Image (cartoon, rainbow, N blue to C red; front, side):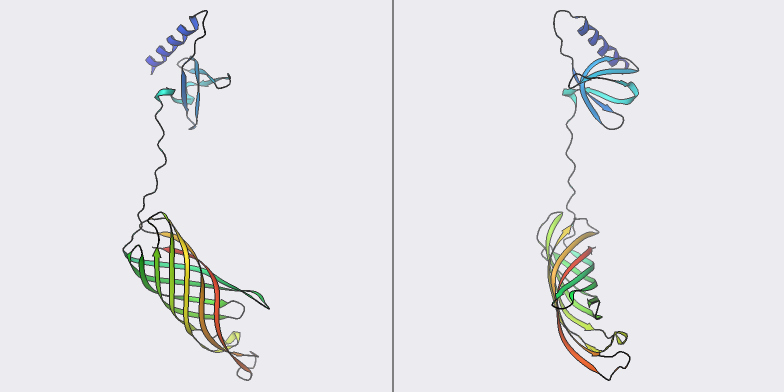
Length: 255
């Protein structure tokens, strides 16, 4: 490094000693200790300091320790573009799915009716186009009216691209076991069939854990016998045969 300082200093002295003509100084790229870079003409250089002129003619002085290295502009290596994350999604083998979702519908009298869901499914991915499994969980179709069920369903899924961010199709079909809640006035309940098609996006293609979101429409048949007056159960009751139809938004972990 000392030899390089001496040679550059000699070149600067030679250039400054020339008279009657304008001398263009060498352009250098200076790599600073904070990770930034500057480009300019090297004006003077000693073992402890340096001065260079940046674009616009402004002179900048730095302590030698502030500069990690400096290279002639033509010798600066080209920066490599950031490496693209490899596609490593396991297109074949057993899979687990954990999803948390919200379902909602707009009613004519009460505004928005909201429910929540939590599901788990275990299955086998035959290839990128087809995976199949079985699942269960807990669904709430109305937090206000306490309509709940335990679903048991066949889970099908398909990924539509070999990319880190890929669209996906999903289908859940099976049976939902409706739950009673005597404290909320639901004395008896019967379940029914369920169907839930959805479209979504998988974010990431890691071999272990990936995140996905989907939006769909859920159908669930159920019947509930409700007490009109919870303080006098069994005296005044009404049976409701319902077909829940809900827009759904789910957040999924795939592993």
